[in-house]
Image (cartoon, rainbow, N blue to C red; front, side):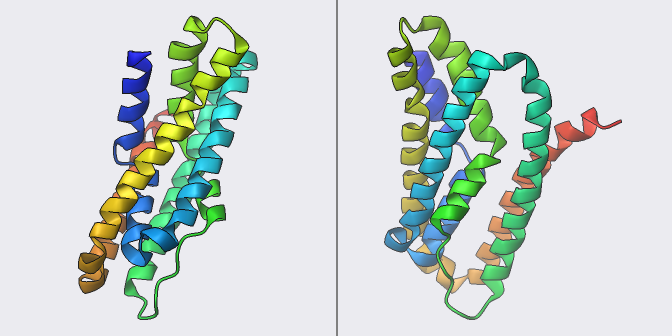
Length: 195
């Protein structure tokens, strides 16, 4: 159980698409207006965890091909988010909050969350669970801990809000580079698999 918690906390709190977007959104619009994104992320991570649980139990042999497809989709979406963050930083109008749907959609193609859920379920939960109920309850730790991690980053973004407003263009470029770097890191393994 301790190892499971360390794994989930480490994977969910480290920088990635969720944490960067959560921080940037809160820095732009504040914690209260930005919470919709985090709730959308929670819904998406819950869906990811359910998919992972079913996949590990039923379709484990198909995982490598599914992972490549999800990874390619995630790269495309991360590049889209990076460009969107850059454009928002250079707009003179008030920035709008990212939506529940955007948070949800990010999770449905966020390979980091799938990897986190697949690994937690296959390596730490199913082998040591004594019942289906225990497996489900322990699997729900993934979305709960990811949600809390996103909130921590959102609070950090809220603290940075005045810095973000004062240096909006620079911050937009930094967020763009961070998200683009995440996309690049996902794209590199895909290049190794290309013919």
